[in-house]
Amino acid sequence: MAGPTRLEIMIDAASPVVAKLSPERRARFTHLVDQFLQDVEFRGADGFDVTSRVRVTLATYACLLLLNRPRERFDLGMRIVIRERGVPTDDQMMGRYSRWGRMDLCWASIMKDGVLSIPGCCAAMHELAHRLDNRNIFWDGLPATHSAECHEKWCADMDEELDFLRTRLANGFETPLTPHAATSQADFFNCTTTAYFEQPDMLRDHFRRVHDRLAHFYEDGR
Image 1 (cartoon, rainbow, N blue to C red):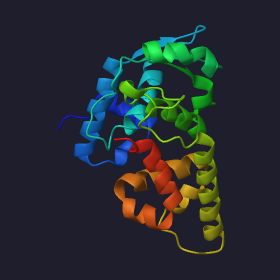
Image 2 (cartoon, rainbow, N blue to C red):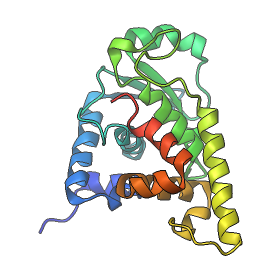
Image 3 (spheres, helix red, strand yellow):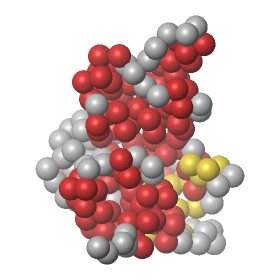
């Protein structure tokens, strides 16, 4: 039996969620990531080195948006420009987005001290979600097929649910989520994402706002 490919190893390193998928879904996910890497042009700006790790990390989280959809790729030739710090303002980038499907990202907001930053990652996923349909990229600043819920509301709901989980654990109440989910914001995101794909009914029943926020990122607009 053949071992994992280099791409599969890099995907697993980028997100622990993928390792928990069924073999069939993992195979589909690897295909989605490989397709994304072929479709998207990555460029570094201001001297930033776009390594294989950078490309696969971004591709991994982008393709989580496609996993529950029947489609296999984003519908536009996308160019992702990555800087170590800082990106142009939305007003400066508006023409570039609409003409070229360009997306600017700040790597320092996605990775902090070598650790994935969940708010930064989700912000990048939010931008990617806006580019799932190039026929409706902008309509009053938002894609016609995507929810207008803001990233700040998403983070606020997730933080409140994490506090709720910690309170229950501190008071000795049982919870359907592993206690490890309360360790950090990143662990809460990873554990609830795993539950979203493997135990959606449980997550919906016990952490409804978390389920709805994850659905917003992973499935809304399919």
